[in-house]
Amino acid sequence: MKQKSNALFIACSIFMQMIIAISMLQAQDGDKKSVIIQSTPPGAMLYFEGENSFVGVAPLKLRAKMIGNYKILAVKSGFEKQKLEYFFRGTESGVMKIKLAPKTPFKAGLRSFVFPGWGQMYSERKTSGLLMSLAALGTGIGTMKAHLDYNKALNDYDKAYDDYQENKTNYQLADEYKKIVEEKYARADDVFQRRQTWLIITGSLWIYNFLDSIFFFPSFENAVFNRATPNFSASFQDEAIALSVTIPF
View 1 (cartoon, one colour):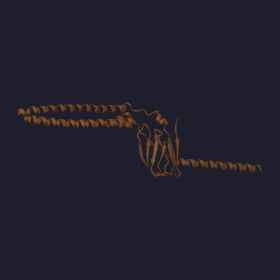
View 2 (view 1 turned 90 degrees about the vertical axis):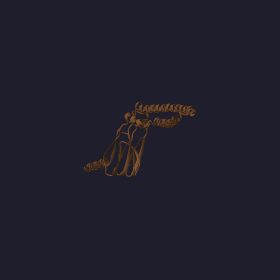
View 3 (view 1 turned 135 degrees about the vertical axis):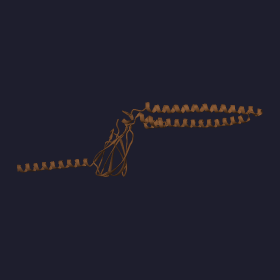
View 4 (view 1 turned 180 degrees about the horizontal axis):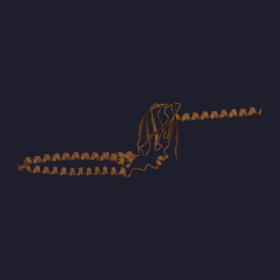
């Protein structure tokens, strides 16, 4: 009777070990059939657009049954967006790495040099960028109007001067034409000074915008906004998407 009990115990032990071994093999096989998307730096938001649209945070594990053409957008504060397109066949495994380029003051300054406010927008200072763009638009319109007014005043002066040259030998009309020339000259000079003022204002704003985008470039490290941003994670398995949200404090 005792021998039968020992034999039964040994058989149960072997059976349990076989079950554990099979489970471990299945788990390993499941891991091999998954794709892990990593970002450098880690923690980038991943936006998937395709047959199923969802959001996740790198590192993100995708199961093998994800099939189809997907557009992937990786976003992280302080880094440039990264876009890629990938066709999932459902048989991929391993690690897919996405590297994000950091935003720099040089890149912000270059953008602001091309167009005021662009560098501030690039460095995620959207309010400053919008105000800078509106200010540049306003000064640009003012400068253009002053330039057009100056051209008109200069043409009026040239016409008045030509009329004076044609009639300066006529003593009855010479003084009248000379007076008109002097008025047109004074008008042209006044508009010229106004145009110069607008040019100085516009140029000063452009320089300030350029320097502002470089010297006031924000530090994205340890930003309160980043620490308080909710983290979304997703897993795609058996044609179902599971989402989870983590809010750090």
